[in-house]
Image (cartoon, rainbow, N blue to C red; front, side, top):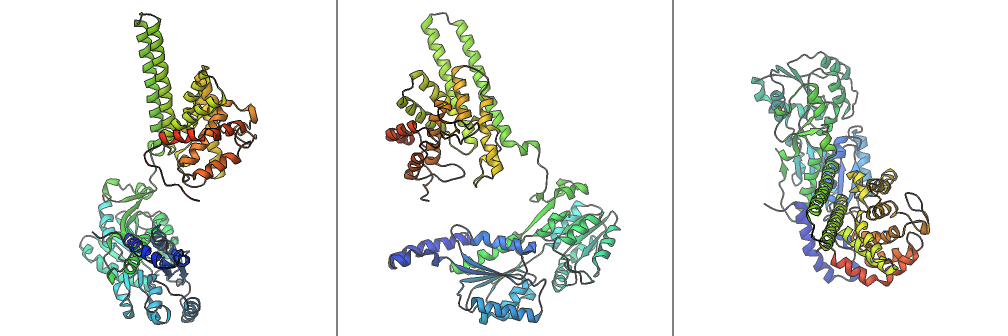
Length: 598
């Protein structure tokens, strides 16, 4: 199997680019932008047509891929609203003025109007430029002077849709087909008649004559059980009234007491049942891939017909429920839209995380009970009792650390994050002059600083983009959640962990959260953890950002001396920087993501 077209293009660039860079002067070689393909996208219709929007999205899914990053221009003919000869002449004059001095590497056309325009004026507009056209209604509608273009025919799966409709609605006697009388509608009507001819032995199929929109809806209201509707394009009624792509499907589905099936994906969100719909995104994606294959030296077919990968059985769950169509009657690979998720599907991550925490806490309880029974059976002196107590404390500390790692992993961070924060905090605490007991408490409690993240939704924790103001307010609440979770005991370890969880986002200058504490109002252990946590997060990266370069991290910490951080702790940080970085190397994963230079 040959590699994907976009991959072949990127391989060609990877082979040619180093040679060009070696031959050209440095000032020219630095301009790698000139090696990216320059493409014009010419749409027949305006972007208010959802079919055109989806075609465009499919094209850009290829052209904007990281390995391609094409330079592209976009034009919309708006032929559904303006197609007079005078208008076309004005468009030609505009395109000649805009692009007479522009050399494109390729041109992508969508739908028949753009193909017809460019085929008739190819030498005038884009001579010797590779051209791909998609969404073309019929091979017979391709202009004769488009023979050197690559054409992707819009094969609508009428037969597949009606076969599925009959399977889903046993006892159907008649299928009414609605299609407008525009030129596009006439071509579609002819293709439909050819495809469904074999079905006429199984069910009566009637193509409705041109009607006004009102008459069509009135006709639909009178349908009875045993009948179905199949809606093709209906952009203009018999009275000349123009409809949007979604308007007639929505009105017909609302009026009809029997199921309405459709042929294109832009008709799906209307209340119709669905069908083996044609995907505009798939056509645009295929067109861009074909152009890149041609630019990479390949030889794609001149005509793509019977292209099945751009059609897919897709159905609306509410419409299936409305007409009591069982899911078992759908094709095995069918996609469902608007199916309500179960409680478990909606909260799967939170439920699994809660079960994991319950399991860890249950293990703690089992171990504690086990140790109690062991203590009752040990009567061999104080030495053995002290040894057993030490084992119990070490087990509790290890389990608390593990619980902290589980919480961190939920937000996309590694388990070693909490180990590093604990080790950094212990080193800074020792440098500050804390007692060994305080250092032990700090190292044991630090891994629990973000336990409150269990109450934050996955969609916010793992969002790769910048948070909204409302989402950031939810994130800030994890400090209070952590304090509440740990508010189960007044023993020193739990009290220290509770304080760190609540205060590790307070700032020395008083602008932190949740309480806006200032200076030494903030607990010393929390102030130490704040420096350790930020150093590790910036150095190793998070789900929503790349790791920072070392110098940028150090500049940030120095800049926040007296702002975010306790000045004395920042001074100790830089005094012991080599030791801290040794800890980072020792407790980091074997491979780290590349450091961004920006």
